[in-house]
Image (spheres, rainbow, N blue to C red):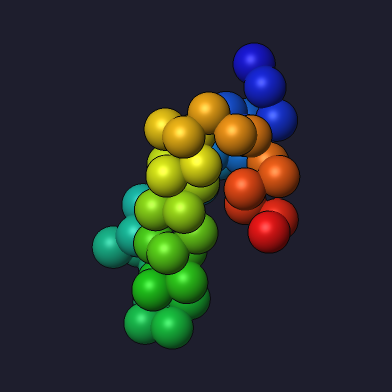
Length: 50
């Protein structure tokens, strides 16, 4: 498993509805979406860190 797949898997496993703080829930959702985008573009973690 590549680095981005591992990191994306971690964020995909988060149950957003269980996060009490709306700001944290939104941030985790944004990170999850960005990781999916980077994975779909097949550019790896360079995309995410950029």
